[in-house]
Image (cartoon, rainbow, N blue to C red; front, top):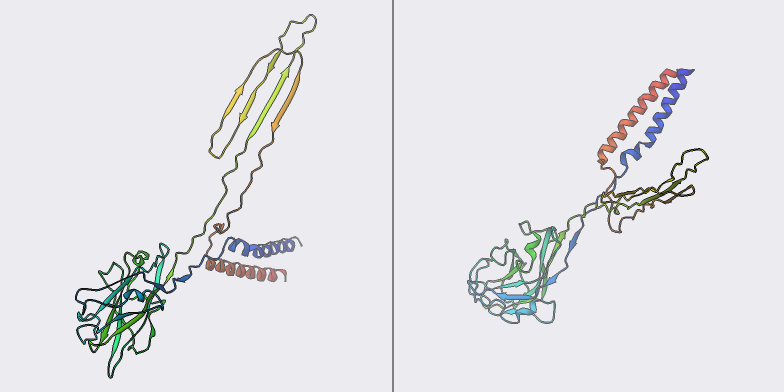
Length: 338
């Protein structure tokens, strides 16, 4: 009977431990803050200039070029574009225009996921005519350029063309500084099979999709409370002489001690002892209660670090192991009871 009782108690203890193990294993676990992709929206340029060297007529969009920095309200024009009939973006006989100062500043440390360039354009057409726009991006003020992207064949009606995508980085890894107005440029090159064609551009805008750094878990604790305890014992002892006994002078000791611990670790102790004859005996003790420590809750928007950092996969493995042990013990005890 004693052996069965002992086994029963062992089994109950094991069940209680298994029941509490999820709390032990997963205590403090919480989802890590997820980094979210953000888009800037299509932004307009605030500056533009023609490429005036080795670029066809060297005058780009010579009519109202600033109108391409806004959606509607007018449009830029390139009249009788270029000096060659090549359809190659790098051909030196093609007219080109630079657009920049898009205000694309993104949070420091962000990863650029993709860049989109929107051009709302058309051309004057003609029998058998073919025209396109070629788009390139620069991250160093126009010194170096990405590989070119081409619009489909233009029509005689204003049409919106979006080159790139939220996940298209144009063949390179962009740093957040690459998008600053000092560095970022868009170059539009007009391509046609005839030098007599006119190009029109209503809007040249840019949209960036980026992922900011995920905020790390932050714990905010209030400063350590300052506790002050002051004890002022006043002890007076009077010895009264009796007849025939030798006279013993009164002795009064007044020790005063102040101890002030603080979060800075400074400890100050002052002791004063004075012997004074006094006619009576009095014992008085006055103590200031210890200051009650207070705890300030963490500020809103801050996430306290978890008490433990157990990996969820490890926690799951431990749970399975504990359940297996419990099953084995239960089987053993059951066989023993029989």
